[in-house]
Length: 150
Figure (cartoon, rainbow, N blue to C red):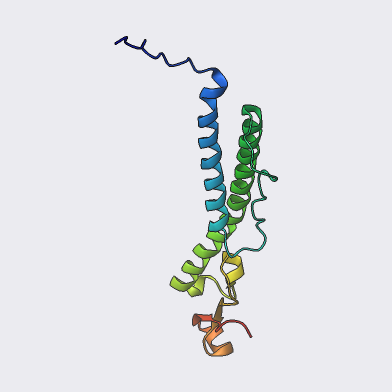
């Protein structure tokens, strides 16, 4: 019997080597974009991520994959900046609410709403004097929590 010659694997060219890596990068960016957007729920002011590539199924070239990856990276950065911009005041409002509950006399007539903290509902925390004018003069402050939407 004649032995068959050993098979030599063809050398991969640069575009072929980059294609799986680009696909993995695109998948990771899509997952991060979806995770960030769903973490923002139930906010209505944060736009949902737009659909990526439309049309019929097809193989994408390396340049098309790079364009999609770059677009996804821009959208992830934009959404992250949008959420960071919103989260700072919300964290401040949560901290204020906690401080109001601990020391109401320091925060007379201060009001914090659920919407200030990025939470759903109509609940409010309002520091008011206990006993009206007499409570105000004697500094008997308390936090009154509303029952929700009217």
